[in-house]
Length: 116
Length: 110
Image 1 (cartoon, chains in turn purple, green):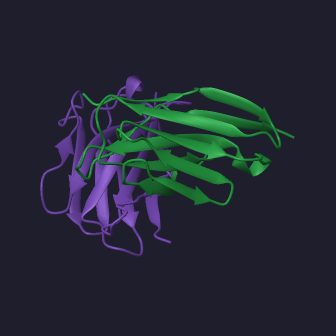
Image 2 (cartoon, rainbow over the protein chains, first blue to last red):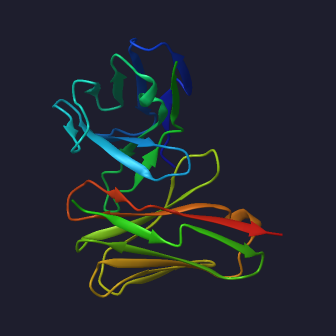
Image 3 (tube, each protein chain N blue to C red):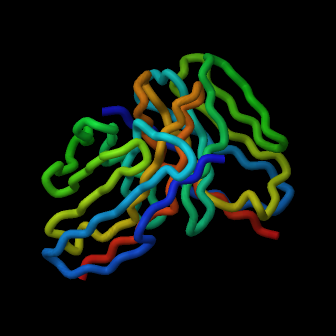
């Protein structure tokens, strides 16, 4: 099956610094990737849709200047959390969409961000 | 905006008992997907339902899409300890974007 990787798997950073998270589709090309945020024991909250070669589409309430998304190639999307604060601490998961009829999403293993 | 709720939030069952989770959308859906997330893991795609009233089976799992395409259910027959995890439905209103339900966390007691 399709494999999506994320790097890093966990990161601790100081308040005010920026953190970049990478999402890669390893064995297929993904024109569309999604970024989610998941709080402990809660659902996945869609943050934005990342489209290769164009600007990301952000969900209502998600600050585009704080969560910068770049989808520079068909296999790589990045999420940069700028000027991170403790309330940004969360589990961030990306997914890449299958272009077939099921439009199934293949999820990465997630990145645990802790801002101190 | 679109909301997708699931009930129950938690369910503990004895191994061998059946389990059902229900998914309800505030809007009519184009299609619905189901995912399973094991503790500490990431969501894994289970199935997609597209047609009104559709029923699909995968071994002990039965998925149903409501006639009005606003609700769905997942039923597991004779649960096993390997069924432990959180089950999410995710609905689409016709775009490539899916809104995830609140999830149902299943615990199976041996």
